[in-house]
Amino acid sequence: MAYSKPQKVRKINSGTMIVAVDIGKGFHVGYFRAPSGEECKPFLFTNSLMSFNEFWLKIQGFFTKHALEEIVVGFESSGPYAEPLFHYLRKKSVKLVQVNPFHTKRVKELTGNSPNKTDRKDPRVIADVISLGHALTLVVPKGAAAQLRRLTQARERAIKRRTAALNQVQDLIFVIFPEFCSIIKNISTKTASYLIKKYPDPRDIVALGLEGLTTVIKTISRGKLGSQKAEALFHAARQCSGVQEGKRSILLEIEYLTSQIGADHCFIANLEKEMEKHLDEIPYSHSILSIKGIGKVTAAGLIGEVGDFRAFGTISEITKLAGLDLFEISSGKHRGQRRISKRGRGLLRKLLYFGAINMVKTNGILHEPYQQMVGKGMPKVKALVAMARKLLRIIFALARDNTVYVENHGGICNQHLKLAA
Image 1 (cartoon, helix red, strand yellow):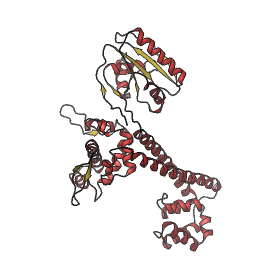
Image 2 (cartoon, one colour; image 1 turned 90 degrees about the vertical axis):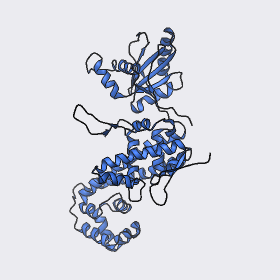
Image 3 (cartoon, one colour; image 1 turned 180 degrees about the horizontal axis):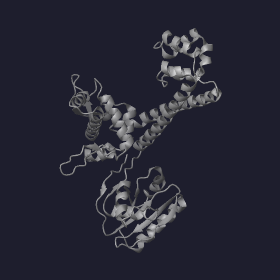
Image 4 (cartoon, one colour; image 1 turned 135 degrees about the vertical axis):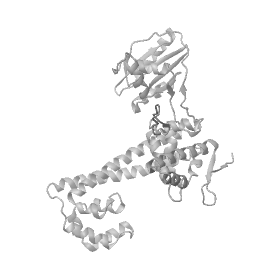
């Protein structure tokens, strides 16, 4: 597998042609600049292969005319809209870089001392940022890591859809059967989902009868819920205070939402199987999985978001990628609080945070340092963020050295055992 490491573009030499692109959904705005200051006027081109070819011919013409040595193409981080152009240009002899939108916003204020924002102005500002050396080379996960990134993002979107559908179902059930939510508080459980799908109307539960309802609940919950819960639900259904007007429409929507939830659930399960399959192709995945509390799905998500842990030289680089680097705003006698920047990959930060939650449990490897921080008066959320940073350091060290994490004698131990080559 091959990866590219995010490195700061510290110098643009006298033979570098800067190509800046303001990315859009329907069309992009291109702009060229030579080291001498000569430039071309910003121009539009669309998201199509023919337009990309014309764009490349213009680049070659400008490059040849000014007898330059290299081409640097830069654009802001702009989600999926830049990907077709990016994958087209990565096959050309150019250096691709990305610019932080926060930097362009600041530099834009210096250009003409005005916050004016136009598609014609933006590519010039991007070129200014690149010439100042504040651009980063693109992280390009390939092979199994690229698959894991796509799968992780697809899983996150599916989970959001499922959560939104569950919230809608809960709201609708409350309208026609408000007692249901007070008796079975978590509607995402297997028992609640089955009852809502099969018997969404309180009259369906009454028609089922107390004995039949008890049998259904015991069977679906595998004995965890019994006759007491069934009696409460049955009597609540008989004396239901839910609305009757327009109920049919609500039941139709509940039927649709439950089918959508089921489809998302199956889709997420399939995605997780694919993630586990591609995770086996990552040579250092066993190092991350050796940490107690890190499962295959979490490990796959972390690798997918990072690209390759071994491509980073220091922990500070990968901490910035996660947006977990610390900053403070202090002046004179005032000393500000230290906070995380949150300027990195949000999903990576989320995975580390939930991983830290598992680590601080009673038998978790980070339980003791977490309790020490909380005992000193640190808020629990901040302590969890600190544990997420510590977890990232552990993962980085294990992946870098191709080692495994070992707990010794039931205590916290940070032993690293070299694996046979």
